[in-house]
Image 1 (cartoon, one colour):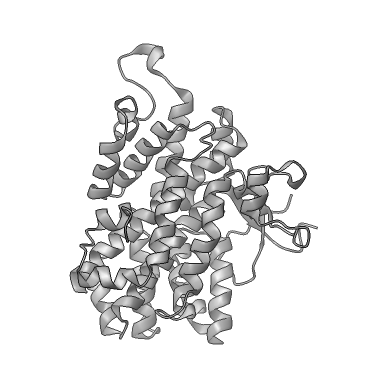
Image 2: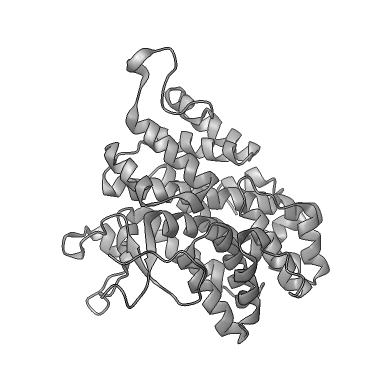
Length: 168
Length: 200
């Protein structure tokens, strides 16, 4: 594989290892995984969710899963302005800044990302309504869903590969 | 409006979206390309019409999905379906569970495994002593990897190896389980399952 593959890199798949040889058998899947990562993090048409927000949310989801190396990978690449989005103690409201720090749209996005990452079984119709009320368009709700869904897939591929490396 | 289905079933329901699907009449060329709509193939599910709001990720989804579930070699198709079921039961995605549990039953011509999975529920996935060691190891691993954070351990992997599953097959199980960490988070959060006959 010539291009960098974030999932393999952060799962610790070392070139020349037995694990790398196993993964090479599914090189097409790993290449499509990287292509989807580009599509959800840096789409040609970002719509109402910026690239800066997307990468910070990806970092946040990796942190919620304790995926330290994937979180560090995204952390290094996110712009300073969106760092707070990846901070797990931040929920879209800046304490001590009065109303000016409040961002209802961002608060709704973060709430949804945390819910669907941690407990997708508890998500309901009302959670989509909450996003809509916070000003997200239908397309942005789907864009956000795809981002959350893909990063949660990537987190599990990385976690699984890391474990497989221990016994392969 | 009919009530959503809340119990696990192998009868594939209808999927009713919470988000307005795109309209094929006004779809962009990129959306039509991602949907693979051609004059001879205009039948597209509501689910895919919802996902078409984000054509870039949709265009990768289909080859990735087909590759992980159906590519040559490695883990058997039925056991990839079992990984999908383990994830979908933990995430309580009734729709995905129905589709992949019924495929598992078709492929194996045996309903007893899925009957036990449904009876045990999300907390008991992979714990049922009445299942064979291989089924138990697959279900346990997929259920553990589906937690947030992942609760899968080296011991869960060793149980797979002891059950005779090769490392190449374990990779396929990781991929099918992870894929349903993705699919469940779309299907279960963007819509709900309703009975086929009640929606007409």
